[in-house]
Image 1: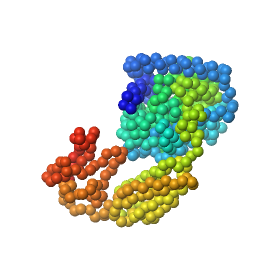
Image 2: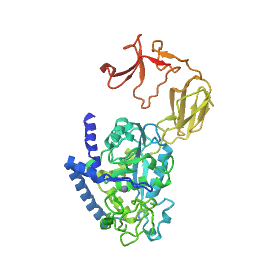
Image 3: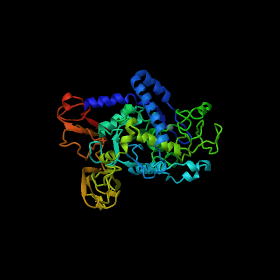
Image 4: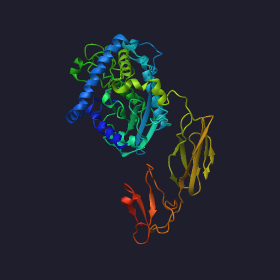
Length: 500
Ligand SMILES: [Zn+2]
């Protein structure tokens, strides 16, 4: 395990160096670091740089041959299904987006790649004839890499979501949820910081085909059209998936739209007019002697609504190529391994609460996160009002101080599963201890005791506990394992509390 983790880290070191494609935002273009990061990689690892160049050359040759000899663009039966997993990296802030926002994003992706987005008929009429039904669908994975159950959404409590450290972000998910190989899943990492961009990804390349880093980073407020995002940002993921399937920006292979020199660059697609690239939405704009396809998903404009037939062919070529193992994603074997082609069944009962500690008379809203195919709920709230509920996300009031269990039984119509969280909701007394307050932890038999102390353990791995192994004036302290084991002595001790 250690060896494979080190290997992953080694691979991740190179992520910034590949043609990293930065995303876009409405009315603002985020800065691009592609050239700097490519230079960094070439200086630090010429072997990977060479592998990337070879992969690009091979895929370009494959694409040209595919389009010239094999491609049948209007065969609706040939739908490429791709298993997807959203990895939400958060510190319980707004970046911890809801399941509903992710489902909305998935719907947007499927609409855009199947010509089901409601606004495509509104494109400049000159391009109506080449608006493509790309015939690519995205389905949330229902099996992890080890075959166990998932709903296609992972959540990882990690400060790395706020840091511009790409490898640490992927590592954090790996440590918490294991490996999600990039040739089995489209990994979408939802973060609070993405190198100053709205999102970025990589073109297909064999150097990292099986790595989790073979995916997409996206800011939480560019995921879907609801929650922390909005309608105009909802095409950001579509844009990044276009890159992930080997599409360049309409103005060519750079992150710098608007340069006159872009007219002489090409995006490798025959039916997208040459353009300098747009950060605004002039749908009659002409920048290189012909009408620009400003409303293309691969533009930086804020009115994107279409792929062209040529872009569709290029993406299909990428999906048929073994470059980056994109041709493994949609195989029947992989769709079975990831649970996408097998019937949905209930396999996990899970729930959260919007607050865990309240005063008497206050309410808690519970959110069901069970999966998959939940058709019924049976909640139990001892001490709560009401004390039972059959709704998915009930709100319960607690009127009496105490510590309460919460239980949810979910069903898919044929089987049931139950999850009980003990001491989950703490209702603290309205009147506390008078000041001055001293606590030496000498008379506590358990910790937390809930009357005076509760523990907010966000990541659930380590907790405070009481110990007689050290003390200030009596026998006891409370301690938090800082790192390693107790035997190694890395403790954080709290032996006396004084509030005056
Ligand atoms: Zn882009």
